[in-house]
Structures are given as structure tokens and as C-alpha cells.
Image 1: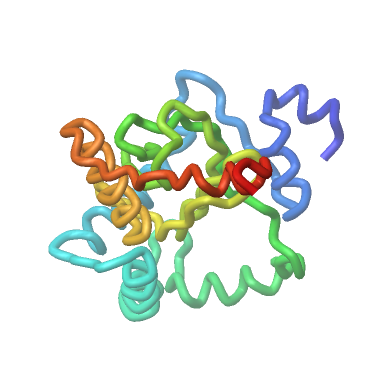
Image 2: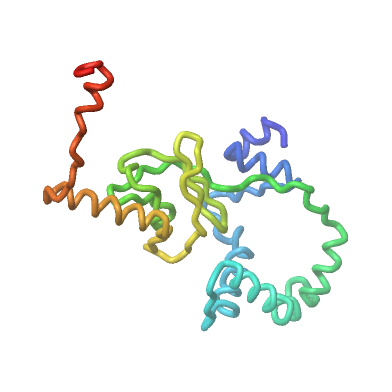
Length: 213
């Protein structure tokens, strides 16, 4: 995609790069023309009304698997009035005009910088993910894909979690939970004065200084 065309459309550089890499044409709709995106809205309404009701899924992969089965058994078998044919038959014709995906797909992970809470978590899309203790207040780099969230501190990976899509969820790694518990127990002992400090044998310093030899 040519730079002057990108500037005309007002696209973000990363969006333009993905479109160019995949050979996509970006269609920017004019303001105040809701009918222009009616096809997209109708597709969303069809999914919300025909696929999602009464469904439960355990993960994103489970949702995708159910969607694939429903698409083949239901959506692709229906006759589409505007197309004038079954969806599966129209798709078979259209596929003959489509290019294959490139061998390496573009990196579309979200990258951001997040401050660690005083409880030892970083918040990404309304979900809290744990990090090792001792980083409260630090700003860390986060990379989020569809399936996982990875946290880096000064270029070093310090946490990796499976991504959650449950609103207000808390994802706590077992290792972080143990470290947090030990740190809290240590602070509690310090606060109560219940700390044993071993006696120091000063004779070894005399030996090093040659005293008494």
C-alpha cells in the first residue's frame, strides 16, 4: 500500500502494514452513513441470534470448535437471499479467486506498558495477572495474544499466563502465590519481632587479624 494512500485513508501504520502484507483492501466508511455497514451488522446479529444463545464454552479453543461445527452444519447450508445461492456453494466459487495466506503471518499481538499494583498484579483488558513479588509500582512491558499474556521486566520474561476472557478475573501463578505467601510471612515476623538472629563468632576476626597468636 502506497504511503500517500495510507495518509489519505488516515490509517494507523500498523493497520496499513498488516493490510499490505495480506493483500487486503481497506474500505473506510463515510461518517453518518449507518447503511454502509449494514451487512456487517446483519452478520453480527445473525451470530448473536443463531449461534450464541444457550451455548457454553470452556475456552477460546472450545468456542472456535463449536463455531466451526455450527458453521459447517448450519450457516453454510442456508440459502442466502442476496447471494441467490447456498452459502457453501457461493463460498466455493469465491475461493477460486482468493490468494493463499503468506507462509508467515504478521505479528498482531498487543503490546503495552502496565504499572504493577501493590498486590503484585498487572491488569490487561480488565483481568489481573500475577507477577513475582517485589515489583510493586514498576512499569512492565506486556505482550498479549489471543491465548496468552507475557510480562517482561527490562527485557527479561518474568511471567507467562494463559489469557482469560472472564471480566474481573484474577490469574495467579502457583509460584507467585508461594513467593507472595513467604514474603507476607517474613513481613509479619519482622513486624512482631519474632526474628532469630544467629550470634556472630568474633573469634574468627581475631584469627584473621593475628590477635592472640
